[in-house]
Image 1 (tube, rainbow, N blue to C red):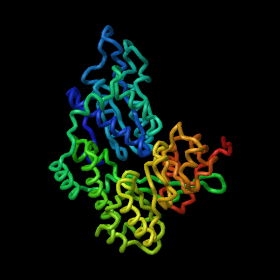
Image 2: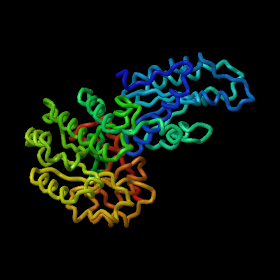
Image 3: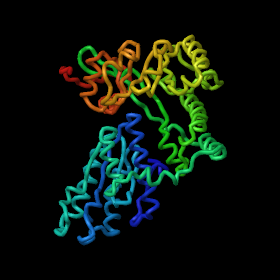
Image 4: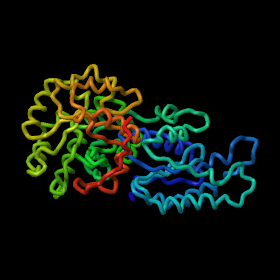
Length: 410
């Protein structure tokens, strides 16, 4: 694993460093919740050894060092990162199961305090596990600490908004960075007639949070909307370059990626279009954002007709129920709509989309109950942690990967 993506935890970290870790962890957790990124989380709750100031202090520098050493196997897992919080809790977050490393680390933590009879709690309570995005709120509560103040509220002022100079410097970094390690692949699945899910296509996006953490940790990339929008156009070019790399499209199945309308007529997109294999023509979806569509409707209509003529499908992503009244989806002539799940979502909201349910991608599917709700209302496509977990071991289309689904439709 790259050292760039890994946090080194010191024995007695400076307060500023721990606060920065808390800020970055909170941002990462929220990113996972919004983008349906599946991650596993383990927390070593050293803060529980000091429940109040009247008890003896059990946390010593060597405890922190030993706990950090115990988590070392997890630090080698895929996409792993370690965070040291101001509360002295240590958080490991990674992708995939890593069962052997997880069990080894957990046993080491429990063994570390097994013989200390003066502990205020059982050693087993020092270890907690979570999964993202489903447990995002629980993890954020740990980040906030005992005072209940979100790290992002306390520390966000320390992040510097982009200006033209810092944006230019960041874009210079992007030109030389290995961008492939920041790409996230989100499966979009559809129900099978015999009662399971199968992979329909794969959506590829850059992890903005990890880009910022690794390449420009002092900047809030999204604080200035117009500069961030320009940045996304640079990211469009980098994504098109990655997809146009030697052999990438030849080995790819049906896929989707987010792109700005202004990038659809760029030289980079035209080169990508020239390289697109005949077998993929008609199986590439271009994801557009609502703000891009609404900001320049005439440019959208021109780009839509151009993309349609070249055989691309068009999708509107990032739709929440609150946006439905101002988005005339049927008149926009889109092929697909990504609707994010929330507890407030109602069947009437689906009708407000004015499109066939099978053209709706229900995003944010974190449980079987949400999946069953969508299926019972005719929704034909799904994405989210529940889908990603089920298809993780079968990333390619046509493998027959299935996820059993209960027949009890509520």
